[in-house]
Image (tube, rainbow, N blue to C red):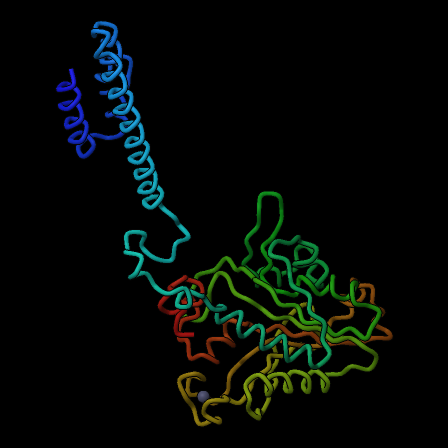
Amino acid sequence: MINDLDSLKSEILKDMDSLSYIEIKQKYLSKTGLLTSMFKGIKDISLEKKLEYGKELNKLKKDLEEKIKEKEIDIKDINLERKIDPTAPFDINTPKDKRPHILDLIGSAHPLMQELEKILDIFQRMGFDILESKQIDDDFHMFESLNFPKGHPARDMYDTFWSDEDFVLPAHTSTMQNRALRRFGPPPIRVVLPGRCFRNEATDASHDHTFYQIEGIYVDEGISMGHMQAVIKEYLEQYLQKDLEIKMQPAYFPFTEPDVELVISCPFCDKVGCSTCGNKGWIELMGCGMIHPNVLTAGGIDPQIYTGFAWGVGLDRLTAIQRGITDIRKLRDGDINFLRQF
Ligand SMILES: [Zn+2]
């Protein structure tokens, strides 16, 4: 009988390496298991041997249960280790000592957000409030409040995305003008309105379906285009860290009157001509103009007393100019190697 126990012990040792803990449990401890049947056999053993045998058997069972427990914990550890962690910034199979140091894994702000912060900082110092635009809006704010009544041909200038419920993805941050006039009025009103815009059109190196715009409005008594030029020039010179020349050329927007396109002397070549300005020496940078009386009225401001100007500038364009990026679509394609340069 004791010999039986010895051979069982060595069999268990062998099985510990080759079987899973479930298989071991089944083989030795189940109802028909080897150890269980040996317990059942105790009743047939002579009285004088019964005590010693029973003791040995109990000890063997206890040892086996402990070993099974250890094996089970081991496997749980392995499973825990192997479980896929989608947030892990490294391959989970990489040995612990070869994984990157935590300090190498800290990310950085996206170049667009870095530039946005700089720009908003300048405007805040100039006394402007900030109100972020909405990423989904309605016809009233996209068109009607901006002097594009239904059927207005200028609506066709904007290739917009519409939802089945007649919501629109804003094609410009001017969607916020009406809200800003109401929220910050009565004048003086000075607000910058940054936000994401969307256009349902083909993309190329300088156009994308999604982009950021920074809108601004300034309304008070006696505001003229002279103020507009001065404010925008001051902001651009602070942002580009360069004295600039400014030209205005005619443009058309239904929500401003007069409407102009602001052209700046190229800050990189001083009008000699370079790749950034397409060898023109000048860069067409943004649309701006005096806010249309109908837009002021829609915002609850009396155009007989107050005048104001508005502008809208593309953040992607500014970022591309500042950082020498040749294809603005790179700003959105999530290429980590591209983003790591900044
Ligand atoms: Zn240039």
